[in-house]
Image 1 (cartoon, rainbow, N blue to C red):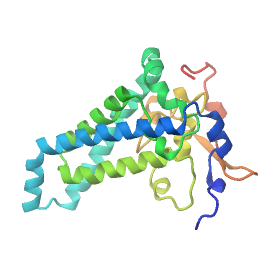
Image 2 (cartoon, rainbow, N blue to C red):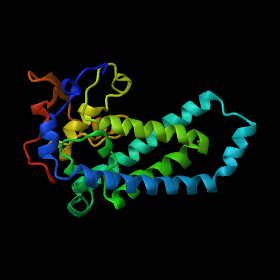
Image 3 (cartoon, rainbow, N blue to C red):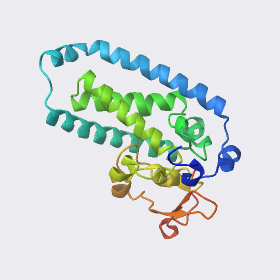
Length: 238
């Protein structure tokens, strides 16, 4: 392996992953496969009802500048939707207890648990948010394939629990695996709601928690939140 042991790049040890998580990997895999089936079904439906756009794109290619603008618009729309819905699902005790707490059974996140969610939450977060970003940005179904593939890769990286050298996502985005790891800490229920691209809404709304990435003597890294930014009140839903 070119990078050697992944233990040298972990934000949590393998032991922590096995002992602290409150759900088995088998259950996570089953849930993720269900989410992917639902999302693929919705994607096929959306493509069917908007296929005239794809037909038009075959006769006239969309300029790259337009595609870039659509990508940025879709990123902002998706981020806006997910920030406020995510924050609401934390602050509303009913929604947290019955829906969002399922995702936080992964105290130590890992890559294929990125979309481990309650089906209702997945519908609200991903399907509605994805549909809004698709329609409001004006992108074609063909362009959306690239956008949602990119968004999925970004979300998987945010949950991978690794701080890999040369990671292009980390070079471009401040919202990364360490940033989201802070959110999964026991006090993270009030901080770092932004996902999957930018951190602007956390900064604007006062929920941004900076961190210091520290190298651990036994190998790997630790994303240590800056303590003076943590409010004295005990977070809800911890």
